[in-house]
Length: 119
Image 1 (cartoon, one colour):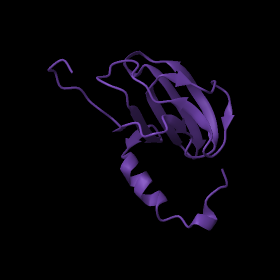
Image 2: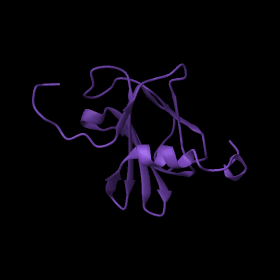
Image 3: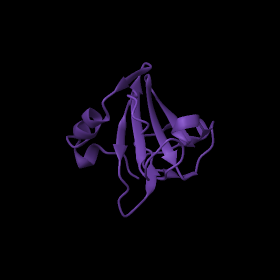
């Protein structure tokens, strides 16, 4: 952005026809507010040391302390904070360490439909 290298943890996803951000699993919202370069950001604790983050949102639809369910809308993709355009910054952290979200997205394809939680 400014010609200087910057560390980037997570995955940036373009908006599709539906700019709504959905929780990938049940959990508790531990952060839902402005967070500097991340702009409007949400962090959800899913238990077992797993947390997910959603940044650059144009709107936050949950509050810190709120319990969320599988596939519950939590925010709207936007361009807040340090960005060059509208997108969702998505992170997965396990025991405080960043993990590649692509591994989790790929793994979810192998879960039988019958084993998925109902929306």
